[in-house]
Length: 310
Image (tube, rainbow, N blue to C red):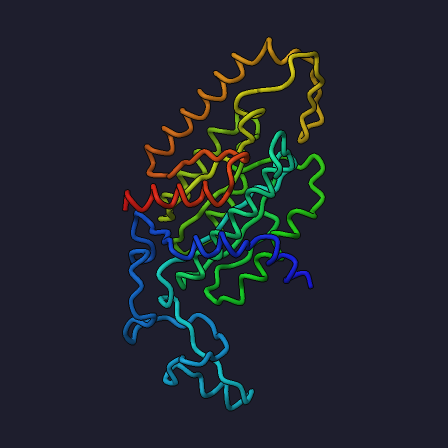
């Protein structure tokens, strides 16, 4: 029941049909292959065995593990490390600040979860392996990449669990989480980070170092910076005294939004541009997303833009 509810929530048939026509192609060579060039799933005789999967009609009989069949009376196919062109991880920020919705119908966490679901579905349609990592102050969930279509339901259930998880005053520590990802993800992969980057300003240098660490280990990176545009980017709150509370620290401050708006928007623009330039210098894709824009529209616009660069 949980799996079917999650599938209905995250996979709108209209969106799925649109995403099926698109291909996410990495700009860099990932694990020796160029993403999108799906050749034969088996490459010679020197491939390294990874795991088994159930036999499906149409699979080549020469890849059936007959020893496993003799023991279990069931057909299983040997899968190899080189069977997929790409290994992908979606790394989703689940901290307290991601629960904020502002003027949007969706919280940033809901928006990020829909993005993740669309990306997982896309990768599996491409026969690529996809996995999921959740973090707040540290990594709390890691689902390893798999390339079987049935795995999608498990990933969707995990996304649903993220939404239900108690994140009261759980702070963002993307830097520490990504350093942990760098140590735990051994094979070169495409890593897609979805976060609002809401953490202590002093930690942003640490975050950039963590991203550089991942690049140094050969991973390709995409950072989706998710904010609610009206309030978090433009500070469009009513022009009257208001009390603001930091959901991650509990700190409160009373102010008149109009008096701070210009300074606030300038600071956000400066930070975003500085972060974008730093990412560009290290060949990291950085994209701003507004939760007021339909997630499928934003994702497809990004994929179209990316396809022109490949």
